[in-house]
Length: 308
Image (cartoon, rainbow, N blue to C red; front, side):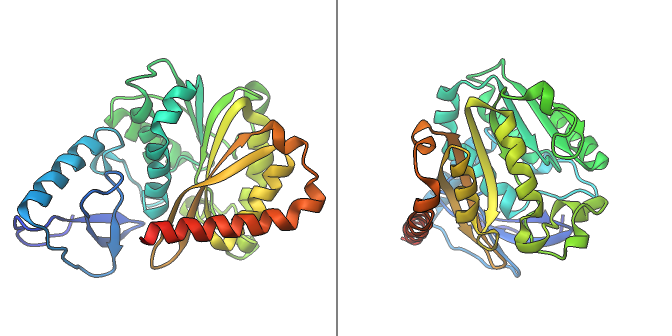
């Protein structure tokens, strides 16, 4: 933790670690979650009146208890640390919390758990109302599996953590049983030879268009999800999320955008998928073009609302 100098009562600023670099972060009033943060490469101050500051501090305290505490998330130089994409995915789960509780899942799973921030947050979001849910997390990096266990223990919660490639040793056992699946995949466009490298590189290297791992994950998710299963996926615009939605549509899934977030480096889109009988009766081939146009309009509309 770096030293920022004294804080005064008119603003609150934190310094968070993000992939080994330090980012200054301003906490804005009335944010949707404890980690709806605006990151900057250099320090900036947002002036707030004392009343707004005190109200924001109360909101922050309440929200933090419902998601993983970033200060208790374990870390290792070979493990991807929580960053904008992690926060966006947790915000999507937080926005859908009431629906998730009403959904009453029996088994929740994360593929690619990294530091354990997301799976821990999901447990904290549900455990008060749904204490008997079983949680499972996988990662191809054995160090990440260990770090996830440390993060879970630091928050007083538990999950079964398995070191495996996607879900290779679990597909038969879990086929049709997972009610909630969350995935923050390696989505960064990179040369294909970087995909699957050992260590932290495996957390972001996504191959051509950032789709190499995503395209491997989709059929696995389809096999594992229950009839009522929900699937949350982190994507970039460079991953062609409309094409991903179309691929899943051909498998009988409806989709929607839950969170859209633009940063200095990327435009993140959190997608939610669920099985939809109506999708099975659609002429997929003839309606692909209209679907892509509809997705583009939905994304544009979503982005406009975000900026209002």
